[in-house]
Image (cartoon, rainbow, N blue to C red; front, side):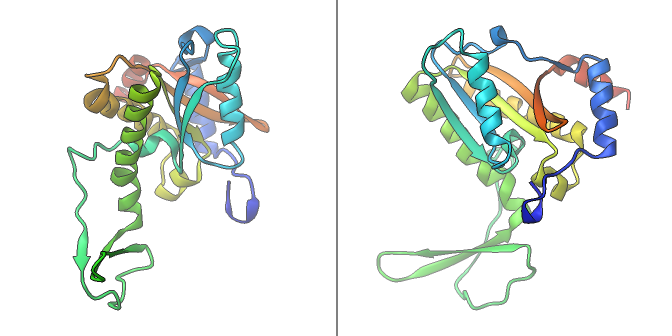
Length: 230
């Protein structure tokens, strides 16, 4: 969604990319059998208030033949699965810690945290907001995925991003970058979680067609081949 409640529209560039991805089979039809939901489903997706509910309804509809009762662990964050694309343990975030919380911030894109301890002392942590989104959100998402698998026994994970997306627009990402981020998120999950858990991971891109988004499974091999020819 855009500012003031205005719906975002797919850009001309993304329309071209979408057409190419459909032609080359990079975006595949999402079939019920590709999402095992007998034990439920973990879904990492964008918290967009205009699209979140449709996305979850589509997931439930795909699993209706497998379960009579909905069972899902939804992780909704701005940007969806793209925010798990950066491995927070391979590239740890560096925080600027200072004592003087009255010091002026370096820019309006900076964010400040005030940590207050029981003894009354405090620390102020400052970092860039755009830098903050990726690695710190990734930590939260990985923790949620692991908890859902361990506590609820859910072994199907959907990594979902969508276009148009406000976060992607702000960062200058087109549909190709969004798709690459979803696949990178799958790599991070496999590296940090799936090695010790039997997770069935499905990378998904939802793209606006008319008034509603359509979900597609991403074919990793075909995307890699297309990307190599760019």
